[in-house]
Amino acid sequence: MVPGKSIASRPELKTSSDKACPEQGRRIEIIRGDITKLDVDAIVNAANTTLLGGGGVDGAIHRAAGPELLAECQTLGSCRPGEAKITSGYNLPARFVIHTVGPVWSGGNRCEAEILANCYKNSLRLALEKGIRSIAFPAISCGAYRYPIAEAARIAMETTRDFLETEDKIDKVTFVLTGDEIFEAYHRLL
Ligand code: APR
Image 1 (cartoon, protein in one colour):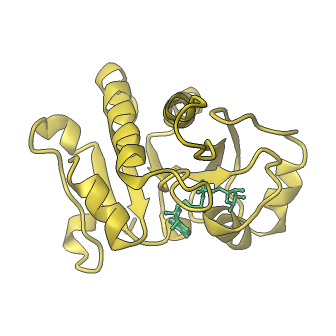
Image 2 (image 1 turned 120 degrees about the horizontal axis):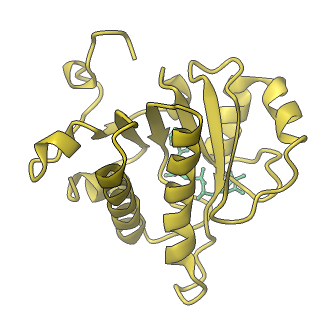
């Protein structure tokens, strides 16, 4: 982010705060845009278990970060759904990339909700461990993994809110969303 220039003052980006809990609302925001452009401590990648890149936001992050990101990912081994691993951000404005693997939607009877909640929990825990104070998430599993958007948004927001209630060392969580349907699904929850 441009220092001192809040998201809200940038017309092209829309943000919302949580009226119900003003303090926490200032710590959670939603914006439209490209997560690879965000100048935050860490952006989260919706990766696959190989951590070797792919399409969607995974492809965008690898393209923007450059080949060194893949080289570091190759040292990490694989990543189980719901887990999170961290690398440098290389050519990205973000200092770190936290790679997590969302569940593939298979109807809801294969612990998809629990796995998706773990993606947010484990990414936030890892951020805390590394002293990261600003973190941005895409809508994990809402693309190729076909997770129903309203439910995925609810899990993302509730898991993040619960986490921030117990931890005050993370200043800002930004959900970076593409498309009206996803933006509205998150906006309704703020
Ligand atoms: N910035 C922010 N959000 C983005 C960007 C971007 N640059 N590019 C895509 N998105 C959005 C998509 O529109 C979707 O809403 O990220 C959300 C997640 O979609 P995917 O990237 O398809 O991720 P996911 O559904 O979790 O599937 C992961 O796709 O790319 C592969 O390697 C990846 O196998 C893995 C799978």
